[in-house]
Image (tube, rainbow, N blue to C red; front, side, top):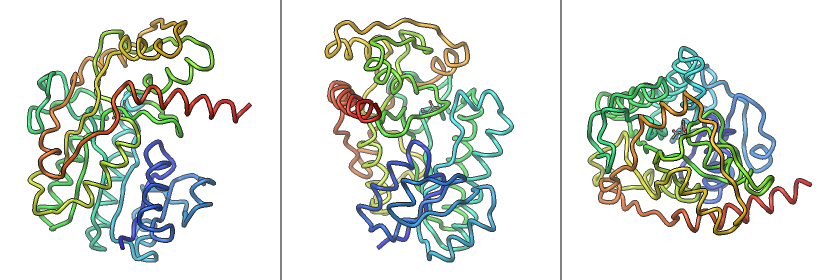
Length: 317
Ligand code: AKB
């Protein structure tokens, strides 16, 4: 049985990945950590407050819990990263480098998310290949490309088992994302139910890859369980399940809420970032090397999101 450490467990991915991993590997085998207390995670298994920028404390948690696999989920996302690029570099790269170094010293495997943000305006836009030009223009993307290279370096130089996925925007109904360019694809469902309308900060015609959280969680476990002999790539795999523009998701919501209205107040930073990212990725390497296959498309995701968000908002009343 794996002994897992999740660094940055309180964020959008971690707050759902932690219970998902605990259900598979056993509560006691998944140690969640975050820079802040997280009541929900502490109630369902081991939890420690840990600043990922402190390698000594990270190493001590790894040794104490006899960890063999580290999931580093710490990141400032794309839009917020542009407000303070130096801090984004410090946090994103600091947490990753500490995770890799602690993993090297304690012989752990490492999973860390990359992103569609690792691509830039000079990458092919449609069917963006697994191996292609990667010259992102955001500090977030620069961290992601550097992180991918570092993961491969630690695998090559030290024999570490490092694996990663280039995530699309993640749509979930539990924890809200914060500071990303794709956040609109989550906020839109909440606002559609709360107010019947939404003002979108991303231009109406820009395609970006998105994924529903259940598929994202499944992908992480499938990749980490994949036979290493089949993996020609490690850091990092393109995956895809749906790609749409704000107009397309709004039309899908109107199938359930016909009076839903969408207006635009485009944020210049999100405008530039979203236009620099791919329209959709080619995920054939993930399909061939570890059997990636999504379950959720936009129609099913929308139906599920609207029902789940409606229940959640009702319960909060
Ligand atoms: C963001 O928008 O910054 C993230 C991502 C696609 O990596 N959701």
